[in-house]
Length: 214
Image (cartoon, rainbow, N blue to C red; front, side, top):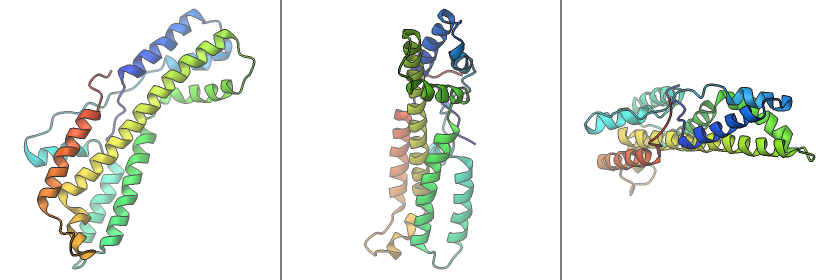
C-alpha cells in the first residue's frame, strides 16, 4: 500500500487530552481498553515528498497517493485496451469509474488508526448507557473527539487518492482519448490532461495538512 496515514495536529491534540485523563483516572477499570488504545503508536505520516520538474515528475508525485492495487489493475487494463484496434470505450470508462470507487474505499480503510479500533467498540457500548457518571461522560467526550479527528482525516485522504487517480488517468490519456468514439463533438486534446494534472496537483497540495507527526 503506497498510501500512508497522515496524522494531523488535531488528532494529536485530541489524543493528548485523552492521555491526560488516563493519568487523572487511572483507577477506572471500565475504560482500560480506551486508555490502552490511546497509548498506542499513531504510525507514520504521509508526507508529500518532492516532485521532479515537468509533467513526468508531477505524474510520479500523484502516483504516491494512489493505492498500489488500483494502479496495478489500471495499468493492466490500460495496456489491454490500448492494444485493441477499437477499444470498448464505454466499458473502459466503466472500469475507470469502478477503480475510482476502489481508490476511495481502499484508502479510507487502510488509513484507519489500528489503536482506535478497540476504542470505537467501547465508545459504541458507552453511548448506549443512560446512567453514566461524570467521569464516564468526560472520557466519552474526549474519546469521540479523538475518533472524529481520525475519521475526518481518513475521508480527506480517500478524497485525495480519488482526485490523484483521476488526474493521473487524464494526464496519460486513458479512456478520455477515445471520447470521440462515443460522441464526435468530444475530441480529447492532450493539453486538457496537462491542465487537469496541474490543477489536481494544486488541489492535493492545498488539501494536505502541512503539519503532522511521525
